[in-house]
Image (cartoon, rainbow, N blue to C red; front, side, top):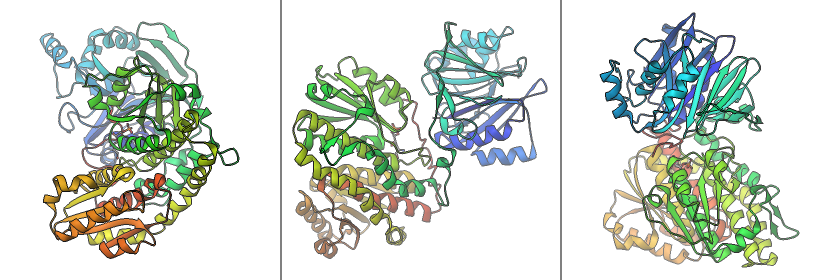
Length: 609
Ligand code: AGP
Protein backbone atom coordinates (compact mmCIF):
# COMPACT_ATOMS: atom_id res chain seq x y z
CA UNK A 1 0.00 0.00 0.00
CA UNK A 2 1.08 3.61 -0.48
CA UNK A 3 2.58 4.75 -3.75
CA UNK A 4 5.95 6.42 -4.15
CA UNK A 5 7.21 8.37 -7.13
CA UNK A 6 10.36 10.35 -7.97
CA UNK A 7 11.61 12.23 -11.05
CA UNK A 8 15.06 13.63 -11.82
CA UNK A 9 15.19 15.73 -15.00
CA UNK A 10 16.30 19.12 -16.27
CA UNK A 11 12.83 20.71 -16.39
CA UNK A 12 10.03 21.29 -13.92
CA UNK A 13 8.88 17.85 -12.79
CA UNK A 14 5.97 18.83 -10.50
CA UNK A 15 3.31 18.03 -13.17
CA UNK A 16 4.99 14.62 -13.63
CA UNK A 17 4.94 13.92 -9.90
CA UNK A 18 1.22 14.76 -9.76
CA UNK A 19 0.41 12.69 -12.83
CA UNK A 20 2.40 9.78 -11.39
CA UNK A 21 0.57 10.09 -8.06
CA UNK A 22 -2.80 10.08 -9.84
CA UNK A 23 -1.79 6.78 -11.45
CA UNK A 24 -0.65 5.39 -8.09
CA UNK A 25 -3.67 6.63 -6.16
CA UNK A 26 -5.26 3.16 -6.27
CA UNK A 27 -2.54 2.08 -3.81
CA UNK A 28 -3.74 4.43 -1.10
CA UNK A 29 -5.61 7.70 -1.00
CA UNK A 30 -5.96 9.17 2.46
CA UNK A 31 -3.24 11.82 2.16
CA UNK A 32 -0.58 12.88 -0.31
CA UNK A 33 2.44 15.12 -0.72
CA UNK A 34 5.50 16.09 -2.73
CA UNK A 35 8.96 17.46 -1.95
CA UNK A 36 10.84 19.32 -4.69
CA UNK A 37 14.42 20.55 -4.78
CA UNK A 38 14.27 24.17 -5.70
CA UNK A 39 17.25 26.56 -5.66
CA UNK A 40 19.10 24.73 -2.88
CA UNK A 41 15.95 24.30 -0.74
CA UNK A 42 13.45 21.53 -0.23
CA UNK A 43 9.91 22.76 -0.88
CA UNK A 44 7.28 20.47 0.59
CA UNK A 45 3.49 20.45 0.06
CA UNK A 46 1.20 17.95 1.80
CA UNK A 47 -2.54 17.51 2.33
CA UNK A 48 -4.97 15.17 4.01
CA UNK A 49 -7.12 13.81 1.19
CA UNK A 50 -6.67 12.82 -2.41
CA UNK A 51 -4.37 13.90 -5.20
CA UNK A 52 -7.00 16.39 -6.41
CA UNK A 53 -6.78 18.07 -2.98
CA UNK A 54 -3.01 18.26 -3.36
CA UNK A 55 -3.47 19.81 -6.81
CA UNK A 56 -5.89 22.38 -5.35
CA UNK A 57 -3.38 23.21 -2.64
CA UNK A 58 -0.60 23.62 -5.21
CA UNK A 59 -2.73 26.10 -7.18
CA UNK A 60 -2.58 28.50 -4.24
CA UNK A 61 0.91 27.51 -3.10
CA UNK A 62 2.83 26.53 -6.19
CA UNK A 63 6.24 24.95 -6.35
CA UNK A 64 8.55 23.97 -9.22
CA UNK A 65 11.89 22.25 -9.67
CA UNK A 66 13.81 19.65 -11.71
CA UNK A 67 14.06 16.91 -9.06
CA UNK A 68 11.58 15.66 -6.49
CA UNK A 69 9.61 12.88 -4.81
CA UNK A 70 5.94 12.24 -4.07
CA UNK A 71 3.69 9.93 -2.08
CA UNK A 72 0.08 8.81 -1.83
CA UNK A 73 -0.73 7.19 1.50
CA UNK A 74 -2.72 4.29 2.96
CA UNK A 75 -2.36 4.78 6.69
CA UNK A 76 -0.75 2.08 8.81
CA UNK A 77 0.94 3.97 11.69
CA UNK A 78 -0.78 7.26 12.46
CA UNK A 79 -4.18 8.45 11.30
CA UNK A 80 -4.62 10.23 7.96
CA UNK A 81 -3.58 13.86 8.53
CA UNK A 82 -1.40 16.51 6.96
CA UNK A 83 1.28 15.98 9.63
CA UNK A 84 1.42 12.25 8.96
CA UNK A 85 1.44 12.70 5.17
CA UNK A 86 4.73 12.00 3.39
CA UNK A 87 7.32 13.25 2.44
CA UNK A 88 8.81 13.46 5.92
CA UNK A 89 11.78 15.67 6.71
CA UNK A 90 14.58 15.54 9.26
CA UNK A 91 15.12 18.06 12.06
CA UNK A 92 17.02 20.43 9.76
CA UNK A 93 14.54 20.27 6.86
CA UNK A 94 17.36 19.44 4.44
CA UNK A 95 16.40 15.81 3.81
CA UNK A 96 13.03 14.48 2.64
CA UNK A 97 11.81 10.92 2.25
CA UNK A 98 8.82 8.89 1.06
CA UNK A 99 8.19 5.31 2.18
CA UNK A 100 5.97 2.35 1.33
CA UNK A 101 6.03 -0.48 3.87
CA UNK A 102 6.30 -0.92 7.63
CA UNK A 103 9.32 -0.39 9.87
CA UNK A 104 8.96 -3.03 12.55
CA UNK A 105 11.64 -1.74 14.93
CA UNK A 106 10.50 1.88 14.67
CA UNK A 107 9.59 2.22 18.33
CA UNK A 108 13.04 1.26 19.61
CA UNK A 109 14.64 3.50 16.99
CA UNK A 110 12.33 6.38 17.88
CA UNK A 111 13.16 6.19 21.58
CA UNK A 112 16.87 6.11 20.81
CA UNK A 113 16.66 9.00 18.32
CA UNK A 114 14.57 11.07 20.75
CA UNK A 115 17.16 10.49 23.46
CA UNK A 116 19.77 11.76 21.01
CA UNK A 117 17.77 14.98 20.63
CA UNK A 118 15.78 14.38 17.43
CA UNK A 119 12.37 16.03 17.39
CA UNK A 120 9.50 13.93 16.00
CA UNK A 121 6.54 15.65 14.42
CA UNK A 122 4.46 12.72 13.20
CA UNK A 123 2.87 9.50 14.47
CA UNK A 124 4.35 7.48 11.61
CA UNK A 125 6.90 4.68 11.64
CA UNK A 126 8.49 6.30 8.57
CA UNK A 127 9.81 9.36 10.38
CA UNK A 128 12.56 7.34 12.06
CA UNK A 129 14.12 6.68 8.65
CA UNK A 130 14.65 10.32 7.85
CA UNK A 131 16.14 11.03 11.29
CA UNK A 132 18.52 8.10 10.79
CA UNK A 133 19.50 9.62 7.44
CA UNK A 134 20.21 12.87 9.25
CA UNK A 135 22.52 11.01 11.66
CA UNK A 136 24.38 9.28 8.85
CA UNK A 137 24.57 12.10 6.30
CA UNK A 138 28.14 13.10 5.69
CA UNK A 139 28.13 14.56 2.17
CA UNK A 140 26.76 11.48 0.32
CA UNK A 141 23.04 10.67 0.36
CA UNK A 142 23.79 7.25 -1.11
CA UNK A 143 26.10 6.38 1.79
CA UNK A 144 23.64 7.76 4.31
CA UNK A 145 20.94 5.50 2.84
CA UNK A 146 23.29 2.50 2.96
CA UNK A 147 24.00 3.07 6.65
CA UNK A 148 20.35 3.78 7.43
CA UNK A 149 18.91 0.65 5.82
CA UNK A 150 21.34 -1.43 7.86
CA UNK A 151 19.45 -0.29 10.97
CA UNK A 152 15.95 -0.98 9.67
CA UNK A 153 13.83 -4.07 10.28
CA UNK A 154 10.67 -4.57 8.26
CA UNK A 155 9.64 -3.82 4.71
CA UNK A 156 10.41 -0.68 2.83
CA UNK A 157 10.54 0.96 -0.55
CA UNK A 158 11.96 4.45 -0.03
CA UNK A 159 13.01 7.41 -2.13
CA UNK A 160 14.77 10.42 -0.68
CA UNK A 161 16.44 13.70 -1.57
CA UNK A 162 18.95 16.04 0.07
CA UNK A 163 19.22 19.77 -0.60
CA UNK A 164 23.00 19.36 -0.71
CA UNK A 165 22.74 17.03 -3.74
CA UNK A 166 19.93 18.70 -5.68
CA UNK A 167 20.36 16.65 -8.87
CA UNK A 168 19.57 13.21 -7.43
CA UNK A 169 17.14 10.83 -5.81
CA UNK A 170 18.29 7.79 -3.87
CA UNK A 171 15.88 4.84 -3.68
CA UNK A 172 16.15 1.56 -1.76
CA UNK A 173 14.09 -1.59 -1.60
CA UNK A 174 13.51 -4.35 0.90
CA UNK A 175 10.08 -5.82 0.19
CA UNK A 176 7.62 -3.55 -1.63
CA UNK A 177 8.19 -3.02 -5.35
CA UNK A 178 10.44 -0.32 -6.84
CA UNK A 179 10.45 0.24 -10.60
CA UNK A 180 13.02 2.43 -12.31
CA UNK A 181 12.07 4.28 -15.52
CA UNK A 182 14.83 5.17 -17.99
CA UNK A 183 13.73 8.26 -19.94
CA UNK A 184 15.71 10.37 -22.35
CA UNK A 185 17.59 12.89 -20.21
CA UNK A 186 15.40 11.99 -17.23
CA UNK A 187 14.98 9.15 -14.73
CA UNK A 188 12.01 7.99 -12.70
CA UNK A 189 11.32 5.78 -9.72
CA UNK A 190 7.90 4.47 -8.83
CA UNK A 191 5.96 1.76 -6.98
CA UNK A 192 4.38 0.65 -10.21
CA UNK A 193 4.93 0.81 -13.95
CA UNK A 194 1.54 2.48 -14.51
CA UNK A 195 3.02 5.73 -13.20
CA UNK A 196 5.88 5.57 -15.72
CA UNK A 197 4.11 4.71 -18.95
CA UNK A 198 3.52 8.39 -19.80
CA UNK A 199 7.27 8.94 -19.93
CA UNK A 200 9.02 5.76 -20.89
CA UNK A 201 8.49 2.10 -21.57
CA UNK A 202 12.11 1.28 -20.68
CA UNK A 203 12.15 -0.01 -17.13
CA UNK A 204 14.16 -2.06 -14.69
CA UNK A 205 13.22 -3.49 -11.32
CA UNK A 206 15.12 -2.98 -8.12
CA UNK A 207 15.58 -6.28 -6.25
CA UNK A 208 15.44 -6.62 -2.48
CA UNK A 209 18.43 -5.12 -0.69
CA UNK A 210 19.37 -2.86 -3.59
CA UNK A 211 19.89 0.89 -3.83
CA UNK A 212 19.48 3.10 -6.92
CA UNK A 213 20.87 6.59 -7.49
CA UNK A 214 18.87 8.50 -10.10
CA UNK A 215 19.93 11.67 -11.92
CA UNK A 216 18.79 13.20 -15.22
CA UNK A 217 21.71 11.49 -16.93
CA UNK A 218 21.01 7.94 -15.74
CA UNK A 219 20.64 5.41 -12.95
CA UNK A 220 23.28 3.53 -11.01
CA UNK A 221 22.44 0.53 -8.80
CA UNK A 222 24.29 -1.22 -6.00
CA UNK A 223 23.51 -3.78 -3.32
CA UNK A 224 23.09 -2.72 0.30
CA UNK A 225 26.67 -3.98 0.71
CA UNK A 226 27.87 -1.56 -1.98
CA UNK A 227 28.55 -3.96 -4.85
CA UNK A 228 27.62 -2.54 -8.27
CA UNK A 229 24.62 -4.21 -9.98
CA UNK A 230 23.94 -4.18 -13.72
CA UNK A 231 20.19 -3.98 -14.21
CA UNK A 232 18.73 -5.30 -17.43
CA UNK A 233 16.39 -2.78 -19.10
CA UNK A 234 13.05 -4.23 -20.23
CA UNK A 235 10.78 -2.64 -22.80
CA UNK A 236 7.14 -2.74 -21.70
CA UNK A 237 4.39 -3.71 -24.10
CA UNK A 238 1.61 -1.94 -22.16
CA UNK A 239 0.51 1.32 -23.82
CA UNK A 240 -0.19 4.50 -21.85
CA UNK A 241 -3.76 4.64 -23.22
CA UNK A 242 -4.54 1.31 -21.55
CA UNK A 243 -4.77 3.20 -18.29
CA UNK A 244 -7.37 5.77 -19.49
CA UNK A 245 -11.12 5.58 -18.79
CA UNK A 246 -12.04 5.64 -22.50
CA UNK A 247 -15.39 7.37 -22.00
CA UNK A 248 -16.57 5.28 -19.04
CA UNK A 249 -17.58 7.08 -15.84
CA UNK A 250 -15.28 4.87 -13.78
CA UNK A 251 -12.31 2.57 -14.37
CA UNK A 252 -14.33 -0.26 -12.83
CA UNK A 253 -17.01 0.04 -15.52
CA UNK A 254 -14.39 0.11 -18.26
CA UNK A 255 -12.68 -2.92 -16.77
CA UNK A 256 -15.94 -4.89 -16.47
CA UNK A 257 -16.64 -4.30 -20.15
CA UNK A 258 -13.09 -5.27 -21.15
CA UNK A 259 -13.56 -8.78 -19.76
CA UNK A 260 -14.50 -10.60 -22.98
CA UNK A 261 -11.23 -9.33 -24.51
CA UNK A 262 -9.29 -10.45 -21.43
CA UNK A 263 -10.52 -14.01 -21.98
CA UNK A 264 -9.73 -13.77 -25.72
CA UNK A 265 -6.20 -12.57 -24.95
CA UNK A 266 -5.69 -15.31 -22.40
CA UNK A 267 -6.76 -18.06 -24.79
CA UNK A 268 -4.78 -16.68 -27.74
CA UNK A 269 -2.07 -19.07 -28.96
CA UNK A 270 -2.66 -21.42 -26.05
CA UNK A 271 -5.35 -23.66 -27.61
CA UNK A 272 -5.46 -25.86 -30.70
CA UNK A 273 -8.82 -27.18 -31.81
CA UNK A 274 -7.21 -29.39 -34.47
CA UNK A 275 -5.02 -31.31 -32.06
CA UNK A 276 -7.34 -30.90 -29.07
CA UNK A 277 -4.39 -29.64 -27.06
CA UNK A 278 -3.60 -26.83 -24.65
CA UNK A 279 -0.17 -25.17 -24.71
CA UNK A 280 1.22 -23.39 -21.69
CA UNK A 281 4.79 -23.21 -22.94
CA UNK A 282 4.85 -19.46 -22.21
CA UNK A 283 4.45 -20.28 -18.49
CA UNK A 284 7.72 -22.20 -18.42
CA UNK A 285 6.17 -25.20 -16.63
CA UNK A 286 7.71 -28.54 -17.52
CA UNK A 287 4.82 -31.00 -18.25
CA UNK A 288 6.81 -33.48 -16.16
CA UNK A 289 5.92 -31.35 -13.13
CA UNK A 290 2.24 -31.92 -13.88
CA UNK A 291 2.81 -35.65 -14.22
CA UNK A 292 4.72 -35.83 -10.91
CA UNK A 293 2.21 -33.77 -8.93
CA UNK A 294 0.12 -35.74 -6.46
CA UNK A 295 -1.58 -32.76 -4.92
CA UNK A 296 -2.14 -29.09 -5.81
CA UNK A 297 -2.26 -26.24 -3.29
CA UNK A 298 -3.55 -22.83 -4.38
CA UNK A 299 -2.59 -19.84 -2.23
CA UNK A 300 -4.18 -16.38 -2.48
CA UNK A 301 -6.10 -13.55 -0.80
CA UNK A 302 -9.43 -11.82 -1.48
CA UNK A 303 -10.76 -12.03 -5.00
CA UNK A 304 -7.73 -14.07 -6.09
CA UNK A 305 -8.70 -16.64 -3.45
CA UNK A 306 -12.14 -16.88 -5.04
CA UNK A 307 -10.51 -17.49 -8.43
CA UNK A 308 -8.46 -20.19 -6.69
CA UNK A 309 -11.67 -21.90 -5.54
CA UNK A 310 -12.96 -21.95 -9.14
CA UNK A 311 -9.56 -23.40 -10.10
CA UNK A 312 -9.97 -26.11 -7.47
CA UNK A 313 -13.28 -27.31 -8.92
CA UNK A 314 -11.82 -27.27 -12.44
CA UNK A 315 -8.72 -29.20 -11.42
CA UNK A 316 -10.70 -31.74 -9.41
CA UNK A 317 -13.07 -32.43 -12.29
CA UNK A 318 -10.57 -32.37 -15.15
CA UNK A 319 -7.31 -33.40 -13.49
CA UNK A 320 -8.71 -35.79 -10.87
CA UNK A 321 -6.25 -34.50 -8.30
CA UNK A 322 -6.68 -33.49 -4.65
CA UNK A 323 -6.67 -29.68 -4.44
CA UNK A 324 -6.60 -27.33 -1.45
CA UNK A 325 -7.16 -23.59 -1.61
CA UNK A 326 -5.63 -21.65 1.24
CA UNK A 327 -5.91 -18.08 2.45
CA UNK A 328 -2.29 -16.95 2.38
CA UNK A 329 -2.57 -15.24 5.76
CA UNK A 330 -3.89 -18.44 7.38
CA UNK A 331 -1.50 -20.83 5.67
CA UNK A 332 1.51 -18.94 6.97
CA UNK A 333 0.14 -19.01 10.51
CA UNK A 334 -0.36 -22.77 10.45
CA UNK A 335 1.99 -25.71 10.77
CA UNK A 336 1.34 -26.54 7.15
CA UNK A 337 2.87 -29.69 5.74
CA UNK A 338 2.87 -31.23 2.31
CA UNK A 339 4.90 -33.85 0.54
CA UNK A 340 7.43 -33.12 -2.21
CA UNK A 341 4.94 -34.11 -4.87
CA UNK A 342 2.80 -31.04 -4.23
CA UNK A 343 2.47 -28.37 -6.88
CA UNK A 344 1.83 -24.91 -5.42
CA UNK A 345 0.15 -22.09 -7.29
CA UNK A 346 0.25 -18.54 -5.94
CA UNK A 347 -2.56 -16.42 -7.36
CA UNK A 348 -2.22 -12.63 -7.19
CA UNK A 349 -3.08 -9.97 -9.74
CA UNK A 350 -0.40 -7.66 -8.33
CA UNK A 351 2.14 -10.33 -7.49
CA UNK A 352 3.07 -8.14 -4.51
CA UNK A 353 0.52 -9.09 -1.81
CA UNK A 354 2.62 -9.46 1.34
CA UNK A 355 0.71 -12.43 2.81
CA UNK A 356 0.79 -14.37 -0.47
CA UNK A 357 4.52 -13.78 -0.90
CA UNK A 358 5.22 -14.85 2.68
CA UNK A 359 3.05 -17.98 2.40
CA UNK A 360 4.76 -19.04 -0.84
CA UNK A 361 8.18 -18.52 0.74
CA UNK A 362 7.08 -20.60 3.74
CA UNK A 363 6.15 -23.63 1.61
CA UNK A 364 8.53 -23.41 -1.34
CA UNK A 365 11.12 -25.81 0.07
CA UNK A 366 8.48 -28.50 0.51
CA UNK A 367 6.87 -28.00 -2.93
CA UNK A 368 7.53 -29.85 -6.19
CA UNK A 369 7.35 -26.41 -7.87
CA UNK A 370 5.79 -22.99 -7.30
CA UNK A 371 3.87 -21.37 -10.14
CA UNK A 372 2.80 -17.71 -10.05
CA UNK A 373 -0.58 -16.92 -11.62
CA UNK A 374 -0.35 -13.17 -11.99
CA UNK A 375 -1.12 -10.12 -14.06
CA UNK A 376 2.29 -8.62 -13.23
CA UNK A 377 4.88 -10.83 -14.85
CA UNK A 378 7.72 -8.73 -13.42
CA UNK A 379 6.37 -8.78 -9.88
CA UNK A 380 8.16 -10.22 -6.86
CA UNK A 381 5.92 -13.30 -6.93
CA UNK A 382 6.73 -13.93 -10.58
CA UNK A 383 10.44 -13.51 -10.03
CA UNK A 384 10.48 -15.93 -7.11
CA UNK A 385 8.40 -18.64 -8.85
CA UNK A 386 9.52 -21.59 -10.97
CA UNK A 387 6.89 -20.79 -13.63
CA UNK A 388 4.67 -17.80 -14.42
CA UNK A 389 1.17 -18.07 -15.82
CA UNK A 390 0.32 -14.62 -17.19
CA UNK A 391 -3.34 -13.68 -16.77
CA UNK A 392 -3.17 -11.18 -19.67
CA UNK A 393 -5.66 -8.72 -18.20
CA UNK A 394 -3.83 -5.43 -18.86
CA UNK A 395 -3.57 -2.74 -16.16
CA UNK A 396 -6.46 -2.75 -13.66
CA UNK A 397 -6.92 0.60 -11.94
CA UNK A 398 -10.25 0.13 -10.10
CA UNK A 399 -9.46 -1.06 -6.59
CA UNK A 400 -12.18 -3.70 -6.84
CA UNK A 401 -10.80 -6.51 -8.97
CA UNK A 402 -12.99 -7.50 -11.94
CA UNK A 403 -11.11 -8.19 -15.14
CA UNK A 404 -8.12 -9.65 -13.32
CA UNK A 405 -10.50 -12.13 -11.64
CA UNK A 406 -11.80 -13.23 -15.03
CA UNK A 407 -8.20 -13.36 -16.33
CA UNK A 408 -7.30 -15.62 -13.40
CA UNK A 409 -10.25 -17.91 -14.12
CA UNK A 410 -9.21 -18.12 -17.78
CA UNK A 411 -5.61 -18.93 -16.85
CA UNK A 412 -6.75 -21.55 -14.34
CA UNK A 413 -9.11 -23.14 -16.90
CA UNK A 414 -6.15 -23.53 -19.26
CA UNK A 415 -4.00 -24.76 -16.43
CA UNK A 416 -6.59 -27.42 -15.47
CA UNK A 417 -6.86 -28.58 -19.08
CA UNK A 418 -3.06 -28.71 -19.48
CA UNK A 419 -2.76 -30.59 -16.19
CA UNK A 420 -5.43 -33.10 -17.22
CA UNK A 421 -3.77 -33.53 -20.61
CA UNK A 422 -0.39 -34.26 -19.01
CA UNK A 423 -1.94 -36.63 -16.46
CA UNK A 424 -4.00 -38.23 -19.25
CA UNK A 425 -7.17 -37.91 -17.17
CA UNK A 426 -8.90 -36.69 -20.34
CA UNK A 427 -7.96 -37.33 -23.95
CA UNK A 428 -8.01 -34.98 -26.97
CA UNK A 429 -11.55 -36.06 -27.91
CA UNK A 430 -12.88 -34.86 -24.56
CA UNK A 431 -10.70 -31.73 -24.57
CA UNK A 432 -11.84 -30.57 -28.02
CA UNK A 433 -15.46 -29.68 -27.04
CA UNK A 434 -14.16 -27.91 -23.95
CA UNK A 435 -11.78 -25.87 -26.09
CA UNK A 436 -14.64 -24.99 -28.43
CA UNK A 437 -16.79 -23.94 -25.51
CA UNK A 438 -14.02 -21.84 -23.95
CA UNK A 439 -13.57 -20.06 -27.27
CA UNK A 440 -17.29 -19.23 -27.31
CA UNK A 441 -17.18 -17.79 -23.78
CA UNK A 442 -16.07 -14.21 -24.73
CA UNK A 443 -19.00 -13.80 -27.11
CA UNK A 444 -21.43 -15.10 -24.49
CA UNK A 445 -19.95 -12.65 -21.99
CA UNK A 446 -20.69 -9.84 -24.45
CA UNK A 447 -24.33 -10.98 -24.58
CA UNK A 448 -24.58 -10.63 -20.80
CA UNK A 449 -22.85 -7.24 -20.78
CA UNK A 450 -25.22 -5.98 -23.49
CA UNK A 451 -28.01 -6.28 -20.89
CA UNK A 452 -26.26 -4.00 -18.41
CA UNK A 453 -29.12 -1.47 -18.48
CA UNK A 454 -31.53 -4.06 -17.01
CA UNK A 455 -29.09 -4.81 -14.21
CA UNK A 456 -28.73 -1.08 -13.52
CA UNK A 457 -32.53 -0.75 -13.28
CA UNK A 458 -32.74 -3.59 -10.74
CA UNK A 459 -29.75 -2.31 -8.75
CA UNK A 460 -31.47 1.09 -8.47
CA UNK A 461 -34.77 -0.52 -7.39
CA UNK A 462 -32.96 -2.38 -4.63
CA UNK A 463 -30.96 0.57 -3.30
CA UNK A 464 -32.85 0.59 -0.01
CA UNK A 465 -32.05 -3.09 0.68
CA UNK A 466 -29.40 -3.29 3.41
CA UNK A 467 -28.70 -7.02 3.59
CA UNK A 468 -27.87 -9.56 0.91
CA UNK A 469 -27.23 -13.27 0.88
CA UNK A 470 -25.39 -14.53 -2.22
CA UNK A 471 -26.01 -18.24 -2.74
CA UNK A 472 -24.25 -20.63 -5.10
CA UNK A 473 -23.24 -24.26 -5.11
CA UNK A 474 -20.24 -26.16 -6.48
CA UNK A 475 -18.39 -24.08 -9.09
CA UNK A 476 -20.68 -21.10 -8.45
CA UNK A 477 -20.11 -21.09 -4.70
CA UNK A 478 -16.89 -19.04 -5.24
CA UNK A 479 -18.91 -16.68 -7.45
CA UNK A 480 -21.39 -16.16 -4.61
CA UNK A 481 -18.42 -15.22 -2.38
CA UNK A 482 -17.07 -12.89 -5.06
CA UNK A 483 -20.46 -11.24 -5.68
CA UNK A 484 -20.83 -10.54 -1.96
CA UNK A 485 -17.27 -9.17 -1.74
CA UNK A 486 -17.86 -6.81 -4.68
CA UNK A 487 -21.08 -5.45 -3.17
CA UNK A 488 -19.43 -4.98 0.24
CA UNK A 489 -16.28 -3.30 -0.94
CA UNK A 490 -17.71 -0.71 -3.30
CA UNK A 491 -21.28 -0.08 -2.09
CA UNK A 492 -20.63 -0.62 1.66
CA UNK A 493 -23.71 -2.86 1.81
CA UNK A 494 -23.79 -5.87 4.09
CA UNK A 495 -23.55 -9.01 1.97
CA UNK A 496 -22.63 -12.60 2.72
CA UNK A 497 -21.64 -15.32 0.30
CA UNK A 498 -22.75 -18.83 1.21
CA UNK A 499 -22.74 -22.31 -0.23
CA UNK A 500 -26.40 -23.07 -0.98
CA UNK A 501 -26.29 -26.30 1.01
CA UNK A 502 -25.13 -24.45 4.12
CA UNK A 503 -28.11 -22.09 4.21
CA UNK A 504 -30.28 -24.38 6.29
CA UNK A 505 -27.45 -24.77 8.81
CA UNK A 506 -27.75 -21.20 10.06
CA UNK A 507 -28.18 -18.28 7.66
CA UNK A 508 -31.80 -19.22 6.98
CA UNK A 509 -32.57 -17.64 10.36
CA UNK A 510 -31.77 -14.26 8.80
CA UNK A 511 -34.34 -14.54 6.02
CA UNK A 512 -37.15 -11.98 6.14
CA UNK A 513 -38.41 -9.22 3.86
CA UNK A 514 -35.33 -7.12 4.66
CA UNK A 515 -32.90 -9.72 3.29
CA UNK A 516 -32.50 -10.15 -0.48
CA UNK A 517 -31.07 -13.42 -1.74
CA UNK A 518 -29.11 -13.37 -4.96
CA UNK A 519 -29.09 -16.96 -6.22
CA UNK A 520 -26.84 -18.41 -8.93
CA UNK A 521 -28.86 -21.07 -10.76
CA UNK A 522 -27.32 -22.03 -14.12
CA UNK A 523 -28.63 -25.43 -15.25
CA UNK A 524 -25.81 -27.64 -13.93
CA UNK A 525 -25.31 -30.61 -11.61
CA UNK A 526 -26.67 -28.66 -8.62
CA UNK A 527 -29.50 -26.82 -10.40
CA UNK A 528 -32.45 -28.53 -8.72
CA UNK A 529 -30.89 -28.04 -5.30
CA UNK A 530 -30.47 -24.32 -5.98
CA UNK A 531 -34.15 -24.08 -6.96
CA UNK A 532 -34.89 -25.72 -3.62
CA UNK A 533 -32.88 -22.98 -1.88
CA UNK A 534 -34.92 -20.32 -3.64
CA UNK A 535 -38.21 -21.91 -2.55
CA UNK A 536 -37.00 -22.02 1.04
CA UNK A 537 -36.18 -18.31 0.93
CA UNK A 538 -39.53 -17.44 -0.63
CA UNK A 539 -41.43 -19.50 1.91
CA UNK A 540 -39.92 -17.30 4.63
CA UNK A 541 -40.79 -13.99 2.99
CA UNK A 542 -37.34 -13.21 1.54
CA UNK A 543 -36.91 -11.46 -1.81
CA UNK A 544 -35.03 -13.35 -4.53
CA UNK A 545 -32.96 -12.24 -7.52
CA UNK A 546 -31.48 -14.96 -9.71
CA UNK A 547 -28.82 -15.44 -12.37
CA UNK A 548 -30.13 -18.17 -14.67
CA UNK A 549 -30.12 -19.37 -18.28
CA UNK A 550 -32.11 -17.28 -20.74
CA UNK A 551 -34.73 -19.95 -21.37
CA UNK A 552 -35.18 -21.01 -17.75
CA UNK A 553 -38.93 -20.74 -17.09
CA UNK A 554 -38.61 -22.33 -13.63
CA UNK A 555 -36.17 -19.68 -12.44
CA UNK A 556 -38.40 -16.94 -13.86
CA UNK A 557 -41.35 -18.33 -11.90
CA UNK A 558 -39.59 -18.34 -8.56
CA UNK A 559 -37.41 -15.21 -8.68
CA UNK A 560 -38.58 -11.60 -8.53
CA UNK A 561 -36.02 -10.66 -11.22
CA UNK A 562 -33.77 -12.86 -13.34
CA UNK A 563 -30.46 -11.76 -14.85
CA UNK A 564 -30.32 -14.02 -17.92
CA UNK A 565 -27.11 -15.59 -19.23
CA UNK A 566 -26.63 -17.74 -22.36
CA UNK A 567 -26.41 -21.50 -21.93
CA UNK A 568 -22.85 -22.54 -21.26
CA UNK A 569 -20.92 -25.67 -20.25
CA UNK A 570 -21.23 -26.10 -16.49
CA UNK A 571 -17.47 -25.84 -15.95
CA UNK A 572 -17.34 -22.38 -17.52
CA UNK A 573 -20.54 -20.81 -16.17
CA UNK A 574 -18.58 -18.66 -13.63
CA UNK A 575 -17.33 -16.52 -16.57
CA UNK A 576 -20.97 -15.53 -17.14
CA UNK A 577 -22.56 -15.68 -13.69
CA UNK A 578 -20.02 -13.26 -12.22
CA UNK A 579 -20.88 -10.50 -14.70
CA UNK A 580 -24.36 -9.55 -13.41
CA UNK A 581 -22.96 -9.55 -9.86
CA UNK A 582 -20.11 -7.18 -10.78
CA UNK A 583 -22.55 -4.91 -12.63
CA UNK A 584 -25.08 -5.03 -9.78
CA UNK A 585 -22.42 -3.92 -7.29
CA UNK A 586 -21.10 -1.27 -9.68
CA UNK A 587 -24.50 0.28 -10.41
CA UNK A 588 -25.52 0.20 -6.73
CA UNK A 589 -22.33 2.04 -5.71
CA UNK A 590 -22.51 4.51 -8.61
CA UNK A 591 -26.19 5.27 -7.87
CA UNK A 592 -25.26 6.04 -4.25
CA UNK A 593 -22.64 8.47 -5.54
CA UNK A 594 -19.80 6.54 -3.91
CA UNK A 595 -16.17 6.57 -4.98
CA UNK A 596 -16.36 3.38 -7.01
CA UNK A 597 -12.72 3.23 -8.07
CA UNK A 598 -11.30 4.10 -4.68
CA UNK A 599 -13.55 2.67 -1.98
CA UNK A 600 -12.93 3.77 1.59
CA UNK A 601 -10.26 2.01 3.67
CA UNK A 602 -9.03 -0.16 0.79
CA UNK A 603 -5.92 -0.22 -1.34
CA UNK A 604 -5.26 -2.11 -4.53
CA UNK A 605 -2.02 -3.73 -3.50
CA UNK A 606 -1.87 -4.99 0.07
CA UNK A 607 1.87 -4.97 0.59
CA UNK A 608 1.57 -4.98 4.40
CA UNK A 609 0.80 -8.03 6.50
C1 AGP B 1 -10.56 -7.37 -4.70
O1 AGP B 1 -11.62 -6.63 -5.18
C2 AGP B 1 -9.84 -6.83 -3.57
N1 AGP B 1 -9.67 -5.45 -3.59
C3 AGP B 1 -8.83 -7.70 -2.89
O2 AGP B 1 -9.58 -8.70 -2.25
C4 AGP B 1 -7.71 -8.36 -3.70
O3 AGP B 1 -8.24 -9.34 -4.54
C5 AGP B 1 -6.68 -8.95 -2.73
O4 AGP B 1 -6.11 -7.92 -1.97
C6 AGP B 1 -5.60 -9.75 -3.42
O5 AGP B 1 -4.84 -8.97 -4.27
P1 AGP B 1 -3.80 -9.63 -5.28
O6 AGP B 1 -4.61 -10.38 -6.29
O7 AGP B 1 -3.06 -8.47 -5.89
O8 AGP B 1 -2.93 -10.53 -4.50
